[in-house]
Length: 284
Image: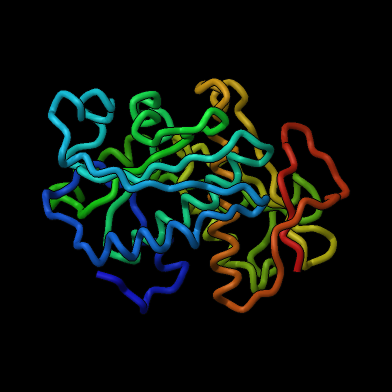
Protein backbone atom coordinates (compact mmCIF):
# COMPACT_ATOMS: atom_id res chain seq x y z
CA UNK A 1 0.00 0.00 0.00
CA UNK A 2 1.32 3.41 -0.96
CA UNK A 3 2.63 5.20 2.13
CA UNK A 4 2.66 8.93 1.48
CA UNK A 5 3.90 9.59 5.02
CA UNK A 6 7.35 8.09 4.53
CA UNK A 7 10.20 10.51 4.00
CA UNK A 8 12.83 9.76 1.38
CA UNK A 9 15.27 8.60 4.07
CA UNK A 10 12.60 6.38 5.68
CA UNK A 11 11.88 4.80 2.30
CA UNK A 12 15.61 4.19 1.77
CA UNK A 13 15.87 2.67 5.26
CA UNK A 14 12.85 0.44 4.64
CA UNK A 15 14.11 -0.95 1.33
CA UNK A 16 15.40 -4.50 1.69
CA UNK A 17 16.58 -7.05 -0.83
CA UNK A 18 13.71 -9.55 -1.05
CA UNK A 19 14.46 -12.99 -2.48
CA UNK A 20 11.22 -14.85 -1.78
CA UNK A 21 7.85 -13.59 -3.00
CA UNK A 22 4.24 -14.49 -2.26
CA UNK A 23 1.79 -15.56 -4.95
CA UNK A 24 -0.35 -12.47 -4.33
CA UNK A 25 -0.85 -10.59 -7.58
CA UNK A 26 0.08 -6.94 -7.86
CA UNK A 27 -3.09 -4.92 -8.35
CA UNK A 28 -3.75 -3.33 -11.74
CA UNK A 29 -3.72 0.16 -10.22
CA UNK A 30 -0.27 -0.46 -8.70
CA UNK A 31 1.06 -1.74 -12.01
CA UNK A 32 -0.29 1.38 -13.68
CA UNK A 33 1.42 3.58 -11.08
CA UNK A 34 4.69 1.82 -11.80
CA UNK A 35 4.25 2.12 -15.56
CA UNK A 36 3.64 5.85 -15.25
CA UNK A 37 6.67 6.25 -13.02
CA UNK A 38 8.88 4.42 -15.53
CA UNK A 39 8.61 7.42 -17.83
CA UNK A 40 9.27 9.91 -15.01
CA UNK A 41 12.33 8.03 -13.77
CA UNK A 42 13.87 7.27 -17.15
CA UNK A 43 16.15 10.29 -17.63
CA UNK A 44 19.59 9.95 -16.08
CA UNK A 45 21.71 12.65 -14.47
CA UNK A 46 24.09 12.58 -17.44
CA UNK A 47 21.39 12.59 -20.11
CA UNK A 48 21.15 8.88 -20.87
CA UNK A 49 17.64 7.53 -21.27
CA UNK A 50 16.78 4.31 -19.45
CA UNK A 51 14.07 2.12 -20.93
CA UNK A 52 12.05 0.09 -18.43
CA UNK A 53 9.82 -2.89 -19.00
CA UNK A 54 7.63 -4.87 -16.61
CA UNK A 55 8.01 -8.53 -17.57
CA UNK A 56 5.21 -10.88 -16.47
CA UNK A 57 6.36 -14.48 -16.10
CA UNK A 58 2.85 -15.70 -15.38
CA UNK A 59 2.04 -16.89 -18.92
CA UNK A 60 5.40 -18.69 -19.27
CA UNK A 61 5.93 -22.41 -18.88
CA UNK A 62 8.08 -23.68 -15.99
CA UNK A 63 10.84 -24.57 -18.45
CA UNK A 64 10.83 -21.09 -19.95
CA UNK A 65 10.97 -19.50 -16.50
CA UNK A 66 13.89 -21.73 -15.55
CA UNK A 67 15.74 -20.60 -18.65
CA UNK A 68 15.88 -17.08 -17.18
CA UNK A 69 18.31 -18.32 -14.56
CA UNK A 70 17.10 -16.71 -11.32
CA UNK A 71 15.87 -19.91 -9.67
CA UNK A 72 17.71 -20.91 -6.50
CA UNK A 73 18.35 -17.25 -5.67
CA UNK A 74 14.97 -15.63 -6.34
CA UNK A 75 11.87 -17.64 -5.47
CA UNK A 76 8.23 -17.06 -6.33
CA UNK A 77 8.68 -13.86 -8.34
CA UNK A 78 6.32 -13.56 -11.29
CA UNK A 79 7.13 -9.96 -12.25
CA UNK A 80 10.48 -8.41 -13.10
CA UNK A 81 11.53 -4.84 -13.87
CA UNK A 82 14.03 -4.79 -16.75
CA UNK A 83 16.21 -1.74 -17.41
CA UNK A 84 17.99 -1.13 -20.71
CA UNK A 85 20.27 1.71 -21.74
CA UNK A 86 22.30 2.57 -24.84
CA UNK A 87 26.07 2.13 -24.73
CA UNK A 88 27.26 5.63 -23.91
CA UNK A 89 29.52 7.36 -21.45
CA UNK A 90 27.95 7.48 -17.98
CA UNK A 91 25.40 4.85 -19.01
CA UNK A 92 26.03 2.73 -15.92
CA UNK A 93 25.82 5.65 -13.50
CA UNK A 94 22.56 6.69 -15.13
CA UNK A 95 21.00 3.24 -15.01
CA UNK A 96 21.91 2.98 -11.32
CA UNK A 97 20.36 6.39 -10.67
CA UNK A 98 17.17 5.71 -12.62
CA UNK A 99 16.64 2.10 -11.56
CA UNK A 100 17.07 2.97 -7.87
CA UNK A 101 14.32 5.58 -8.22
CA UNK A 102 12.04 2.81 -9.49
CA UNK A 103 13.17 0.49 -6.67
CA UNK A 104 12.30 3.14 -4.08
CA UNK A 105 8.96 3.85 -5.75
CA UNK A 106 8.15 0.15 -5.45
CA UNK A 107 9.13 0.31 -1.77
CA UNK A 108 6.66 3.16 -1.28
CA UNK A 109 3.99 1.00 -2.89
CA UNK A 110 4.65 -1.77 -0.39
CA UNK A 111 6.48 -4.03 -2.83
CA UNK A 112 9.69 -5.98 -2.45
CA UNK A 113 12.59 -5.81 -4.91
CA UNK A 114 16.15 -7.08 -5.29
CA UNK A 115 18.91 -5.65 -7.48
CA UNK A 116 20.28 -8.34 -9.82
CA UNK A 117 23.37 -7.66 -11.87
CA UNK A 118 25.00 -11.04 -12.28
CA UNK A 119 22.63 -13.70 -10.95
CA UNK A 120 20.45 -14.00 -14.04
CA UNK A 121 20.87 -15.20 -17.61
CA UNK A 122 21.37 -11.90 -19.37
CA UNK A 123 20.79 -13.24 -22.88
CA UNK A 124 17.42 -14.78 -21.95
CA UNK A 125 16.13 -11.58 -20.34
CA UNK A 126 17.63 -9.50 -23.17
CA UNK A 127 15.50 -11.44 -25.64
CA UNK A 128 12.39 -10.55 -23.62
CA UNK A 129 13.49 -6.91 -23.56
CA UNK A 130 13.95 -6.88 -27.35
CA UNK A 131 17.16 -4.88 -27.13
CA UNK A 132 18.29 -2.76 -30.03
CA UNK A 133 21.81 -3.29 -31.38
CA UNK A 134 23.27 -0.47 -29.25
CA UNK A 135 21.45 -1.27 -26.00
CA UNK A 136 22.60 -3.16 -22.89
CA UNK A 137 20.67 -4.85 -20.09
CA UNK A 138 22.91 -4.20 -17.05
CA UNK A 139 20.38 -4.93 -14.30
CA UNK A 140 16.94 -6.26 -13.46
CA UNK A 141 14.84 -6.69 -10.32
CA UNK A 142 12.05 -9.02 -9.28
CA UNK A 143 9.08 -7.12 -7.92
CA UNK A 144 6.17 -8.29 -5.82
CA UNK A 145 4.78 -8.83 -2.36
CA UNK A 146 7.12 -10.38 0.18
CA UNK A 147 6.46 -13.97 1.23
CA UNK A 148 5.51 -14.37 4.89
CA UNK A 149 8.54 -16.57 5.49
CA UNK A 150 10.89 -14.30 3.58
CA UNK A 151 11.86 -12.01 6.44
CA UNK A 152 13.79 -14.61 8.42
CA UNK A 153 15.51 -16.27 5.46
CA UNK A 154 16.42 -12.96 3.85
CA UNK A 155 17.74 -11.66 7.15
CA UNK A 156 20.06 -14.66 7.42
CA UNK A 157 21.24 -14.22 3.81
CA UNK A 158 21.79 -10.49 4.26
CA UNK A 159 23.95 -11.22 7.28
CA UNK A 160 25.85 -13.93 5.40
CA UNK A 161 26.75 -11.69 2.46
CA UNK A 162 27.44 -8.73 4.75
CA UNK A 163 24.64 -6.34 3.80
CA UNK A 164 23.93 -5.62 7.47
CA UNK A 165 27.59 -4.79 8.05
CA UNK A 166 27.78 -1.26 6.74
CA UNK A 167 31.07 0.58 6.86
CA UNK A 168 31.14 3.43 9.38
CA UNK A 169 31.32 7.08 8.42
CA UNK A 170 35.08 7.31 9.03
CA UNK A 171 35.71 4.80 6.23
CA UNK A 172 33.47 6.46 3.66
CA UNK A 173 33.36 10.23 4.16
CA UNK A 174 36.29 12.64 4.39
CA UNK A 175 36.96 16.35 4.72
CA UNK A 176 39.47 18.20 2.58
CA UNK A 177 41.43 15.05 1.68
CA UNK A 178 41.13 11.28 1.75
CA UNK A 179 42.80 10.96 5.17
CA UNK A 180 40.71 13.21 7.42
CA UNK A 181 37.37 11.60 8.39
CA UNK A 182 34.34 13.85 8.07
CA UNK A 183 32.63 14.57 11.36
CA UNK A 184 28.84 14.68 11.36
CA UNK A 185 28.93 18.13 12.91
CA UNK A 186 30.91 19.38 9.93
CA UNK A 187 28.46 17.78 7.47
CA UNK A 188 25.66 19.80 9.12
CA UNK A 189 22.57 19.84 6.88
CA UNK A 190 23.91 17.00 4.71
CA UNK A 191 24.11 14.36 7.45
CA UNK A 192 20.95 12.56 6.29
CA UNK A 193 21.92 12.75 2.62
CA UNK A 194 25.30 11.17 3.41
CA UNK A 195 23.70 8.54 5.62
CA UNK A 196 21.44 7.68 2.69
CA UNK A 197 24.58 6.86 0.70
CA UNK A 198 26.08 4.83 3.55
CA UNK A 199 23.09 2.48 3.71
CA UNK A 200 22.61 2.25 -0.06
CA UNK A 201 22.65 -1.15 -1.78
CA UNK A 202 25.78 -2.09 -3.71
CA UNK A 203 27.01 -5.16 -5.56
CA UNK A 204 28.15 -7.73 -2.96
CA UNK A 205 27.85 -4.91 -0.42
CA UNK A 206 31.30 -3.59 -1.33
CA UNK A 207 30.23 0.03 -0.75
CA UNK A 208 32.69 1.43 -3.31
CA UNK A 209 31.66 5.06 -2.86
CA UNK A 210 33.81 7.65 -1.11
CA UNK A 211 32.84 11.27 -0.47
CA UNK A 212 35.30 14.11 0.12
CA UNK A 213 33.84 17.37 1.36
CA UNK A 214 35.57 20.20 -0.46
CA UNK A 215 37.10 23.30 1.07
CA UNK A 216 33.93 24.97 -0.09
CA UNK A 217 31.48 23.54 2.45
CA UNK A 218 28.80 23.36 -0.22
CA UNK A 219 30.68 20.83 -2.37
CA UNK A 220 30.76 17.08 -1.92
CA UNK A 221 32.98 15.13 -4.32
CA UNK A 222 31.99 11.55 -5.13
CA UNK A 223 34.73 9.02 -5.90
CA UNK A 224 34.74 5.34 -6.82
CA UNK A 225 37.06 3.04 -4.90
CA UNK A 226 37.11 0.47 -7.64
CA UNK A 227 37.85 -3.21 -7.33
CA UNK A 228 38.87 -3.58 -10.96
CA UNK A 229 38.71 -7.36 -11.08
CA UNK A 230 35.24 -7.43 -9.51
CA UNK A 231 33.96 -4.44 -11.49
CA UNK A 232 34.83 -6.14 -14.78
CA UNK A 233 33.59 -9.66 -14.02
CA UNK A 234 30.61 -9.16 -16.33
CA UNK A 235 32.57 -8.02 -19.38
CA UNK A 236 31.50 -4.60 -20.52
CA UNK A 237 29.00 -4.23 -17.65
CA UNK A 238 30.55 -2.04 -14.94
CA UNK A 239 28.61 -3.00 -11.84
CA UNK A 240 30.41 -0.67 -9.46
CA UNK A 241 29.65 2.30 -11.70
CA UNK A 242 25.99 1.32 -11.31
CA UNK A 243 26.58 1.61 -7.56
CA UNK A 244 27.72 5.21 -8.10
CA UNK A 245 24.38 6.02 -9.70
CA UNK A 246 22.54 4.49 -6.74
CA UNK A 247 24.59 6.64 -4.36
CA UNK A 248 23.80 9.81 -6.32
CA UNK A 249 20.11 8.93 -6.35
CA UNK A 250 19.99 8.53 -2.57
CA UNK A 251 21.91 11.72 -1.84
CA UNK A 252 19.82 13.78 -4.25
CA UNK A 253 16.44 12.46 -3.08
CA UNK A 254 17.14 13.27 0.57
CA UNK A 255 18.76 16.63 -0.17
CA UNK A 256 15.89 17.77 -2.37
CA UNK A 257 13.23 16.68 0.11
CA UNK A 258 15.01 18.60 2.86
CA UNK A 259 15.16 21.75 0.75
CA UNK A 260 18.92 21.68 0.17
CA UNK A 261 19.68 23.41 -3.11
CA UNK A 262 22.18 22.04 -5.58
CA UNK A 263 22.79 19.22 -7.99
CA UNK A 264 25.35 16.76 -9.35
CA UNK A 265 27.91 18.12 -11.79
CA UNK A 266 31.11 16.85 -13.36
CA UNK A 267 33.49 19.50 -12.05
CA UNK A 268 37.15 19.90 -11.17
CA UNK A 269 37.50 18.55 -7.61
CA UNK A 270 40.95 20.07 -7.33
CA UNK A 271 42.55 16.92 -5.93
CA UNK A 272 43.39 13.40 -7.05
CA UNK A 273 43.75 10.49 -4.69
CA UNK A 274 45.49 7.16 -5.15
CA UNK A 275 42.98 4.36 -5.71
CA UNK A 276 40.02 6.69 -6.14
CA UNK A 277 38.31 7.54 -9.43
CA UNK A 278 36.45 10.86 -9.55
CA UNK A 279 32.79 10.61 -10.59
CA UNK A 280 30.88 13.82 -9.85
CA UNK A 281 30.40 16.70 -7.39
CA UNK A 282 27.31 17.88 -5.53
CA UNK A 283 27.41 21.65 -5.92
CA UNK A 284 25.08 23.82 -3.87
